[in-house]
Each structure stands twice: as structure tokens, then as C-alpha cells.
Amino acid sequence: MKKVLLIVSMMLFVVNLSASELSNAYKKEYTFLKAQKSELQSRFIKEESDQKEEIAKAGEKLNALQEKLIKVSDALSIAQEKLENLSKKASEVAENGDITSTVTMQAIAALQEYGVAIDESNRSNNVEKLTMAFDKAAKLYDTLSSVRVEKGKFYLPSGKPVEADIVKVGNIAAYGLAKEAAGALAPAGEGKYKLWNSKDASDDAKALHSNSKLESLDIFMYENLDKEVEFKKEKTVGDTVRAGGVIGYIILALGALGMLLIVFRVMLLSKSGSNVEKLTATVVENMKQGGVPAAQEAIKGYKGSTARVLKATLRNITRDREHIEDIVTENILNESSAIDRFGAFVLVIAAVAPLLGLLGTVTGMISTFDIITEHGTGDPKLLSGGISEALVTTMLGLVVAIPLLLLGNLLSGWAQKIKDSMEQSALHVINVFEKTRREN
Image (cartoon, helix red, strand yellow):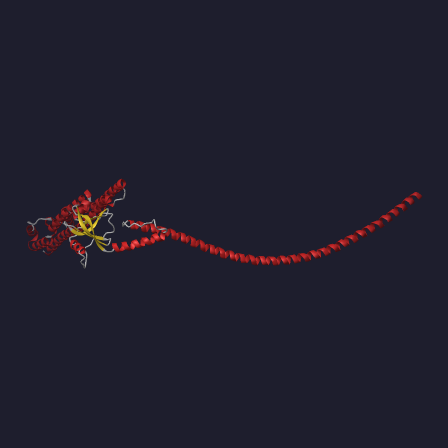
């Protein structure tokens, strides 16, 4: 028991000793930490102060740099604008140089066509060349705008070349004076002249050669001498018909036939319609005086459609009305074939003529395309034959069809009027007969 108490007391002593040492250790540590805290706080305050100063200095530097950046940006914009202007001026200068070179070459080429050459060996730039070209052009203009006499030759209408004095009026006309002939000249191709087919130009040529003043000129103006000028000939009806080819002749033949039938038809209708009123009056007058036998005797010697219809009416006039009207209609129908003779054929020709014209148009265009396939489109003269056939046949078809159609319809109306007159006359005779019979 004493041992236990001893042990417990010893343990309590050790515990008391350890707690005291631990408390001292904590106090030392706390004092050290507190000192460090104070030191850190002072360092933090100092650092914060230093940072504020640095931030303020950095802000001032930033503002200064921003102002400098703005100035540099403005200077850069101005420099870029100047650079763009310089680039534009450089491109304009280059473009002007190209234009000047082009104009110079064009001027030299244009002057060479008139035999004017420019010496380029002593010319260092295009401006000098262009200046010389303008000088040469001014002298050439003075020459070409004047009336001048040169030795040369031209071709007569027969094709014979003759030596002559060529009076040139600027560069647009010329006159020739030779022993064989004199007059205005026209281009013959390849820079040559031929005599123009004008009778009044010889006096003008002589007057210009002697520097006489004229109030008017019989002149042939041309653009250049490279291409020959074909003189326009007056086109006759025969030329037009020949241009239509075979189909054109066929259309004209049908037109002539149609007009001949029109003439025959006019003569026939004139004969058929001329005595309708006269025959009707004769029949009515004799019927009133001597009856039906007297009327038949009165028209016995008459011939023609109207006379035949009236004779048939008088032969059957004693029958009932319906029957006799049928007889009159039948006889008029029988006479219609003679009255309408050639009428349908004329209208057929009028309908066929434009179709033949269309056929000629198709064949002409086929011919034109064949020529294009073989020779191309370089020479319009090669195409003129097919085009002429295409257009002329259409024209001839319309020229034939229009009058035939018009006259054919007019004559058809005339024929119908004659038939109506015949029917009216027959009915009038029937009415007079019935009235006379009622009165008696």
C-alpha cells in the first residue's frame, strides 16, 4: 500500500512538472508568434504602401504611353493616307504612260497608212514621239483638206486603164481628166479609181482642175479606196421576176391565168345579169295583155340564164304555188353552174399563190444556208441570190393573191345577186299571174 501511494505521488509530481514546462513553452511560442505577427503586419503595411506607389507610377507611365500611342496612331494614319495618295499617283502615272504609249503607237500606225513615217531613233520618250506625230498630222490635215492635182490613172467603164490628172477633193472624193473621158471617180478597190457613171460630172472635173469656183458639185464621196464600190442599177420588173426563180414564174403564170378567168367571168356575169329587168318587164306586160301564151311568145327568141328560168316558170305557171316554186329553185340551181363558172378556180389560185410564195421562201433560205455552209458569211453578195428568191417569191405570191381574192369575192357576190334577181323575177311573174287570174 505504501508502494502504491509512493508511485501515485511520484506520478503527480511528474505531471505537475510537465504541465509547468509545457505552459512555459507555450508562452515562449506565443511571444515569438506575436512578434512575428507584428513584424509581418509592419512589412505588409510597407509592402502595401510600396505597391500603391508603384501602381501610381505605373498609371502615370500607362497614361504617358497611351498618349504616345495616340500620337503614333495619328502619325500612322497620316502616313498611310500619304502612302495611298502616292500609290494612286504612281498608278495614274503608269496608266498615263500606258495610254501615252498606246496613243503614240496608234498615231504612228495611222500616219503610216498615209505614207507618213516618224523617225523614232532620236526620240527618247513617248511625249516627243507624240509631239512629232501631232505635227505630222497637222501637216497631213492641211494636205488632205485641200483640192490638189496629182498624176495617176483610172479605169474607164469598159475596164481600160487610162493615164490622167487626178483632182483630189480632200480625202473624200476625186475627179479624173484624161483624153478619153473626164468626170468623178469612185473606188475600184486596192487604192485604185474608176469613172463614175454620171454624165454631169465632167464639167465639174474640168472646173476643179482649172481652179474655177462652182456653186454646186456632182460628186461621189467615198470612205476609203480599199473596197470597190458597185454602182446601183435601176431594178426592172424583169429583174425582180428573175430573182424569184422558177417558183416566181409559176406564180406569175397562175396570176395571169387567174386574171384571164376574171375577165371571162366578168363577161359571163355581164351577159347573165344585163337583161333580167328587161325580160321581167316584157313577160309581165305581155301576160297582162295576152296571158301566158303571149308572154311565152314574147321571150321565145331570148337566150341566157334568166330567159331559161322565166320560160320554165311560164311552162309550169298553172300548177300549184309550192310546186312551181320548187321548179323555179331547180332551174336556178341548174343555171348556177354557168353563173359560178371559174369562180371557185379563181379563189383556189388566190389561196395557192401565197403558199407557192412560202415555198419559194423556204427554197431560197435553203439555198442561202447551202452557200453559207460552203463559203461562209464573208461575202454578202453570195447570199443575195437565195435571199432575193426567198423575199421575191413571197412578194409575188401576195401580189397575185390579194387582187384575185378581192375580185373573186366581188364576182361571187355579183353572181349571187344575179341568182337572187332571177328568183325575184320568177316569183314576180308568178304573183302577177295569180293576181290576173283572180281578177278574171
